[in-house]
Amino acid sequence: MAATSKGFVDDIAAAADSCVYRLQSGLRLDLSPVARFGRSVEEASIVASTRSPNDLWKRLEDCYPPNLRSLPSLDAVAEIARVEGIAVCGVPRAEIVQKLLAAPDASARRQVLVERSDEIMDDCRVVLDDLGGELVGLCSEAVEAFSDGYTSAAQALAAGVIESVALRLRTQSAKEFTGACLDRVPIGRLRCWLALQPVARALVRWSPESGRPPPRGFSRHATVHAAGQPGVFSTCRSLTAVMLATSVAEQFHGVVAEAVCQS
Image (cartoon, rainbow, N blue to C red; front, side, top):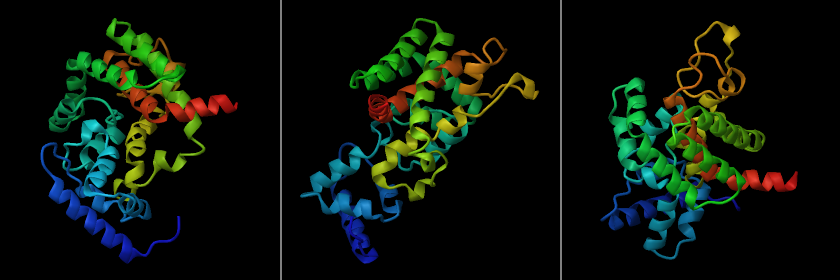
């Protein structure tokens, strides 16, 4: 894309803010974070290519995961995803996200997840039903295994899905694993960035020989390499793994399918 002057980008962003303000009614979508996202050339191109305020509203709305559109800010939910390894992009539903944000600590958030696990599995089904491909099929099997009470099997299968996605993305999206803070994420990459925030936590290495207790949350490495060790498999770890597998499958199943076809 041709270089765009900062003045032009700022003017476009200001116009976007004005349009969105006039359109706010019914479904509430607080777009204050959009103004923070770098006044980027990408953002300017989104706005400049729209033909009407309604087009603008729809295109900006589509950049937000549906379950997060009612939040006034994404900072807190992104922090939970990054620090605790809990998927927030696509699943769970908005009501459960609000419960997670209201919980006083990580232990209380894990309790929320377990208590609402049936609804979370329904949320995963809704997301996956709109997709296709073998990776998505495996993720759906993990959902059904969890719902049928085979939580360890679900955790192991979800770990495979997460690893498959991570392997395909490591070379082309390395910056998004460690990546920019929220303030610097282009609006068009917001969903991908949010989906990736729990992945680094899930990929932390651990072994019984380390002398340390297993990670509190889901660990792909422990799941694959330390089966049978106390504290590696649990209902909450399984649930977290299935949520994360669903989230990354939704965002990246096409990337994985394309890579498989080229190999």
